[in-house]
Image (tube, rainbow, N blue to C red):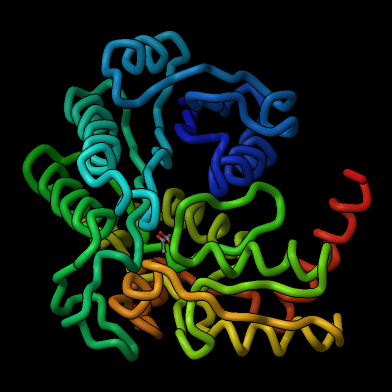
Length: 318
Ligand code: AKB
């Protein structure tokens, strides 16, 4: 089997995706990489390489040495952090992708996964049931880089036949590795604060509805898209992908069902403007029809698992 390289294996998605890929395809067939060490599960479960995807030469060497056939390229700077350093974010988010697309164009790797985001949409996009094809005028540097990345992916597919596949992730909620620097991060932080202190100060307004997804659904969808017969992958820019949409208030009310004295305060920051520029609900019928995407978790089931797992984690850590 051609081996798999996960770039960004220390991150929120990469740490869980690496473990799931190893479960499915074997520990020896999945190589993890990042600029820093990943969590224990990733480090102890198989081979790990220190790698900066912006550096094309070591990237190519690692790919050839390890007989890599597929790359999941997850390293990126998220929306909030990117606004603080726009040019660095642009560089980081584009250079690695182009390095990898060029390896695929030259036949060094066969298949590439690259994550896009709901951030490709902007204030002029319809907010409800946002279509796959619609107005896209992102107002953040993160969104601009994701939209440009989508155009590059489609271009490399059309012009060079590169088998590249992509999903527009909503906010991802997980308990294993925390997110960092995103606008949807409140929906992860809130669980830790609820368990530790029974209160949370939210940087988004209580009514700000955003599309969200529990990590196991995102991991399942990502691997399913990569494993789908290529004739079923009709969109080579990036697929809309959706599970649930909720506001901070709705999430707080759900948490209160488990922690009755939980309270929320609101202190908005610059991320409120970012959130207001994004859709509230997403039409992902293309993904559902083309390759059979479906989600499992809703707000209720996700909240139950998040609280249970974070309680376990925090008690272990104390
Ligand atoms: C962010 O908030 O920047 C990310 C995203 C929606 O892509 N979670």
